[in-house]
Image 1 (cartoon, helix red, strand yellow):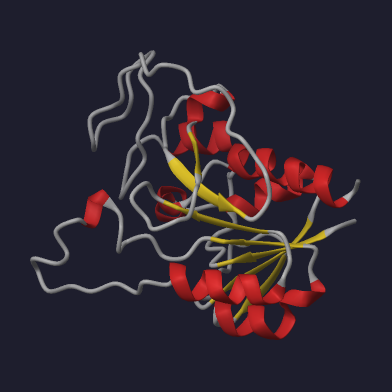
Image 2: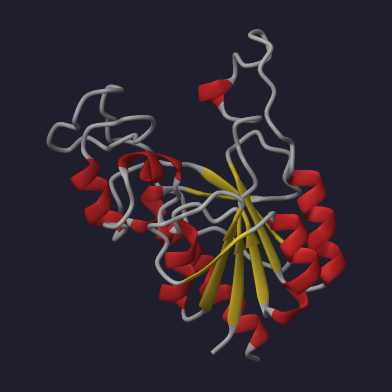
Length: 210
């Protein structure tokens, strides 16, 4: 089985998608992740990557997104700074020479990223995320957004999509369509749907198993 390294893994949302694609995944995060399912290493992501990245067949990285997120867009006016780790992470990934993916929110400084949306995978959330990939990949067809989303802080009504950020109501809804039943509400709010990384993971396996 091919091995994938998931950097800045958090609770393991991306990891789960790669596992569904067929990878054996090791997650790395600087913060302890007691809910992580699978092999986990508590360490600095870039330090671990530079020392052990060559042992893996592919690498995924989700550097902290607060620097680019609209939900924290007023941080500059309040004098709050967040780490900008996309550049250093990319530099380290290139030095390792393995197929890599960098994931972040729209607006992050990724190079020629594809955008993935929940509508591409028939799940009731838009949840746009962008992915810089070191290999050729295209996004699935992006359906027109017609469903309304829930009001922030309100559980979605019938036929509404859910936007899950912060301490949102509807954890059971998100856990059901993502399969991430072991994550806390806060971890779900910071996760990406594993459908996204399953899609990317299958493409990686197509390439490295040719």
